[in-house]
Image (cartoon, rainbow, N blue to C red; front, top):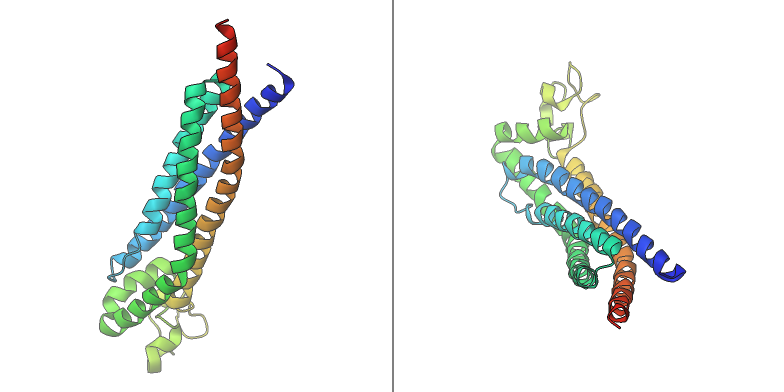
Length: 221
């Protein structure tokens, strides 16, 4: 093996090690988001499952494909490397679609959740308590949501008693907006960075596959 092939082999191996870690990162972010939005979907009728579930699936698949790529690089298997490259191209398309979906729909989805929060607070404050407890927030807009009772707020609206406007949490609308922006940005940025590095990995994978195929042909003569 020449110096060039040696470098390609081990660059591909360590690149896939990075992908495996990135896949675990996507998996972790997806699970974290799923746990958070479950509290919201238990109380309001809005579909928040698609993004987190897609992220979990993509993260798990990225990890498995990266592991397959590590094996293909070490063994210099033409079949494994070509299969790996095809899977990587499919994953690149999937992650581009995921990142685009998140950035295009995040603002609209956040506004929809805030509208549902306001409606739920007006119609059923008892049900809204679960959201206040889960997100450490107070009403949709903060203490002012309780109107004339802001001098004496529910204990769940504050970190310590007595609970009043001076030590009340912020509004749940702001909390969920910050949550969606943070996790949405995390998912999108991780996906875009991984796609950029995957493009390099596909090129290296195909180069190493070609080298393995040529070496196999030479060994037959």
